[in-house]
Image 1 (cartoon, rainbow, N blue to C red):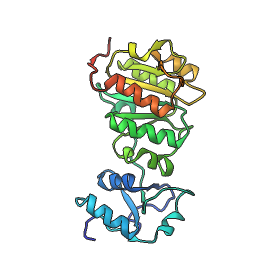
Image 2: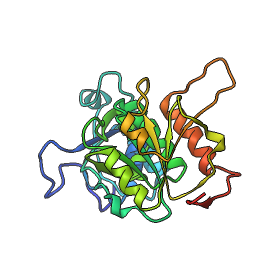
Image 3: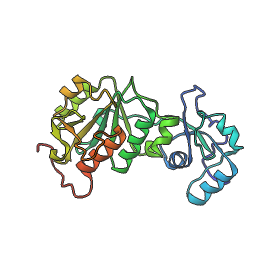
Image 4: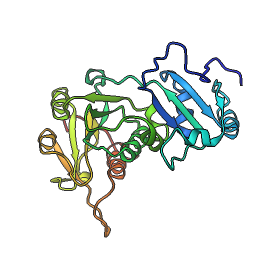
Length: 259
């Protein structure tokens, strides 16, 4: 298969240090191949997967190792749905808080550790054009494997800002004019009463535990989702989607960050 981007073997100069990101499944792999910032180390495809990728993304240049499906299954988690696609790559570079623009919309994750949830949040963030996701150096899952599959290619579109302390980061953003909106089932303000506006950071807490106290203390408003049905709470990734739709979805009219 012609192309200038060979991933059939470990790329020249790529360190064999064990810190590679593992991506599998059609969408994560296709989006990674299309991302010029993603440095590819190794690409394994089944014959059918190679045909699908060539057919659906003829613009991509790639040169894979063609393997049997069971060869990929041995490299991923048990029961992982890899669809015949497996890729090893360098991690994408993370941003700093200073890299966030004056009109940015950001998500911040307060010790959300489930990779399925973080992946789903990343996919939602990509759909809503979120500028970055803030995570902590500790108590955050790696952007690989299960998380990447759940993100369905979203990792390639939403940069990560990794910080040592989330509360300190919120203080910095507050000084820069970001409105800090915590989302918690025990919030004092209905989400519908929070007007849209940028710059803003929407802070999500872990399921069950919610926002930690110091995180809450460094939010300008802590909002709740009032659910009309019998079930009164949502999975954190679904709650993120509802919040983003309310704050920047169709029909929302942006206002200044001072509102």
